[in-house]
Length: 373
Image 1 (spheres, rainbow, N blue to C red):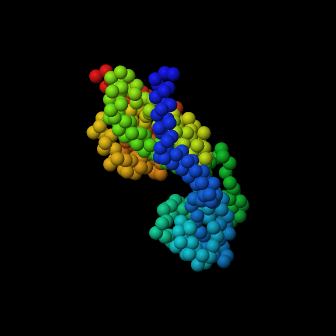
Image 2 (cartoon, rainbow, N blue to C red):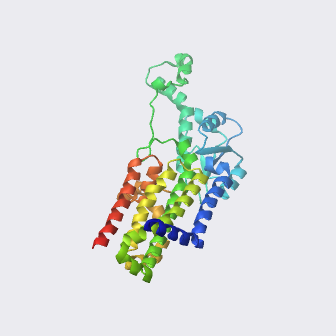
Image 3 (cartoon, rainbow, N blue to C red):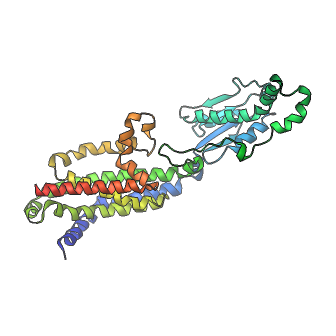
């Protein structure tokens, strides 16, 4: 048996004998599986719940157009005023719309000023987008009357000719006559709001898994550095080389992480490329652990820095929110963050996966250069 195989088997046995490995192997997939199976379907498919209080008469057309925009991203619920106040107050609905009793008369008079009352709570977050949707529905309701006013004021049509013109004002244009908008995300991918809403939980699971594996890699760097400082490793290093000593133990530590991460992503229903994308991601962090373990002053400081890693990983990657859209100065830090590169690889960007693998190779060469020095 070669030295690498023997050292790998020894390191893997030592790793599997530690309780921390089994916590990762069992807890991470079980947590992802439980979140994917126990989370109510409505919480996944309709993250934004909005109440609508309609008048007794005259709000049917508006409600029909609002329902046409209800789907996976936003769901509108018809409710009474007391129910709307209670649901928004409890945080179950993001916000609620209250229509006045003279809603239909005001639409006919084109009086749209302060047409709605918007109920929001302390946890309301997306009500500005809901306002835009409501404004679009109102514009669709009043557009025929506005067109009539314009035709009359401009002299294009006489008032006696309006009955013959009105059917054309209410016609729905075909696709060839419309102004069509193609939406895309900030990184250039096509944007389908309904698809993105359905993928939210799986993408979040992929990002959180990547951050947990990053923490595992940092703990591995500490373990490698501690083992490298042992009398046995000091005696063996001049014979085999420090990198040759660390590589099999590193592989024994990353193999359980790869298995746990893959099982967690499969349980959470993450996109198919996320599982193979773990290989270049772990190659990069494995190379980083290999380099960090060579410097006692660095790996001994990792216990102090590790608690800040989850916060930095969430803030400097688009797991929850891409802060570079709000603060452009953070753009380079977010774009080249390894977690971001992993998420982009999950989205099908093979170049980002190759960049992660190349980064791991560079770190391995750095460790070999330290051996020669």
